[in-house]
Image (tube, rainbow, N blue to C red; front, side):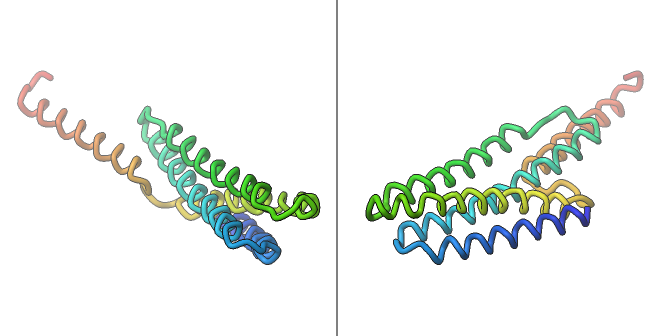
Length: 163
C-alpha cells in the first residue's frame, strides 16, 4: 500500500518535471493550453479509475456481482482523446516544416509524461483508498441498492413467519 503511494508520487513528480520541460519549449499559447489539458486529463482519469477499481474490489469481496468496467473504459477513452488532441495540435499548429522536423522527437515527451501521470495517479489513489470504503458514486449506489434489498427481505421475513 505505501509502496503504491510512493511509486505513484515518484511517477507524478517525474511527469511534472517532463511537463515543465515540454511546456518551456512550446511557443504558441494554444499548444500550451493543450499541454495543460494533457497533464490534467491523466491525473483526473487515474484518480477516477483507481476509485472505480477500488470500489469494484470491495463489491467483489462482499459478493456483489457488478462491475464498473464500462466507466473505466470511458475514463481511459477521455484520457486518450486529450492525448491525441495534444499530439495532433503540436503537429498541425507548428509554424514551419523545419520546426516540425526539429520538434518531432520532443513531442514524444508529451506521451511519456501523460502516461507517467496516469500510472502515477492510479497507483497513488489506489494506495490511498486501500483502507477506505466505497469512494465513487457508483460504489455508493451499489451499497445503497444492497441495503435496500436486505431491508426489504427482512420486512418480508417479519410479515411471513415461514419465509
